[in-house]
Length: 311
Length: 316
Image 1 (cartoon, one colour):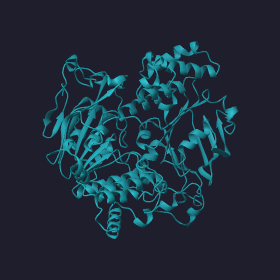
Image 2: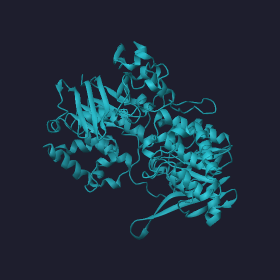
Image 3: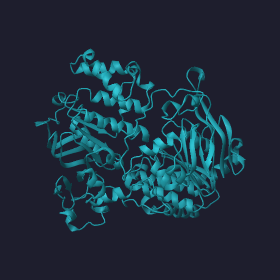
Image 4: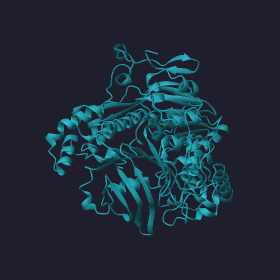
């Protein structure tokens, strides 16, 4: 469905773009039809950059992204519009996604103007109401309101409904529930699960491991723009092999067990651009060998991939 | 008792009237206690933390008493509080990363702060360096600008700075919400270590994430829409909560090991009341599955077993 093939994004920073900042390096994975893949990483790991590249919001430095065997970087004009009809994104800040001057349901009118100008208004209104009901909102309560009159959870569902008005097959959900309250976030998560059951593929970008585990079939763990470990969610979570994944699993605050007393690992300033493994400066198991070459992603068990010299 | 709060009521002045952000908060913090304050956004947890340290407009003092180490704090008086702030009671604000002056080197800024309290920077420097070692920062950060540090490093700098004068109470407001899990764990453990070493007597950890509190807090206080719902020892609140809101809140948290395919969690239907004109009585009544007529009166925050306080008519 959506396949990333050695995708990299290098930003040029500093005066005249003299310095290169690799945000994403050689990332390859795929999302199959009707599957939820969670992309897990800390801030600055490049997870949002990947989402934006899939949505064509930023360009790709090298590599290719294939959507149903179509190279998305070549899409232009009508073909790109067709792509957006099938691939949409929802982002972290529901309040920032709206223009506060206009009513919130203006986003639906824009979709109609751009994609469905031939549908009569009455049919369209009915379609909007049906879609709002399907994301768990009561149309009478939420239509004709300004963004500040709606809660974060309602606004976020609005955005999902906007995506559903199109014939989408793939949704990029970038931290969509991190700004919602604990009591309402689980409902939005359940909504995603329902959409998946209807055949939608979802790339679920998050830094919260328990959310990733709750919803996804497969997980991809990113660190400094590189994939550290990926595979079926159960294998990655119950049998983490990469030292970074192990550290993450040990650090997740749980309600059923307390943190183990382990050696504390904190990042120490600039993540230097080493020749070898990017995780080496923080790794507890690293040896000088690790600085020599970048570890390749190898399959250690069926559908369980790890990039570590020392697994 | 390090900190004693009685009937603390704080409102926000708005053009449409007062927003009743905190209503009659009464609780105690023991010496050496790490108390977690949990709740959703708009429940008044940040108002509580800030009100005790820096009560500035539009926040308005309505009534109540705050006693620190046996001495009443003049929290309604910005000027008189100056004596207590930073020395006796200190805060790590929500966006601690933005608490550092971007155009000063970290060392210069810390120097300015301690000199403003009449303390010689040179005299305190050895202690400052010792504490930087404790949180795993090199002394070079003193010569760096905030922009050169990552979020987690800035958070640790602010932790060291705000506890430099060994205050009695430290208020840590959402200090880990912008950090990833491994840094989160490290920062929380440092907080505990600072308490264990006696740099601070008691800590109030304000967060929306109950699972973090379970790891480090001695007691947890749950708030809802400006009212205290429940307070008790951590184990009791997590495993035997009595207030319906606490029960539903804990039940709605996804845990590692829970998949929607096997266990489908559910949220709390409805949304919190508008604090400009909240309904009389218990503010959770509209979303509460066990509400009855009595809930139109405000439930008192009563001790139902030693150290376990609940504000719910169903539980007395």
